[in-house]
Image (cartoon, rainbow, N blue to C red; front, side, top):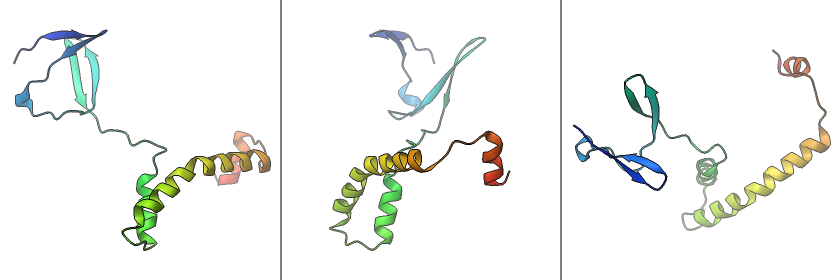
Length: 109
């Protein structure tokens, strides 16, 4: 199946035919190969600092009533930034720098 590129802003867009059944928002990695461009599907990366699933799992495990889960979730999610700040402050105040060798010994490598 042949398609044409089109200009959109400063980018060149390539249309994926509807027959390919690729849903909107799918992540692909573009690779330049000898005879063209290869698009490979990739698994979306989970945001490293998104603890939503962890927070929700804890709240459910703690047995909150269903009408209070959302309120508790929002409360805990809003406190995350201050928790990280407290951890950073505590680490700076109470830890010492160590060499790579000292760290390896500390963690048993």
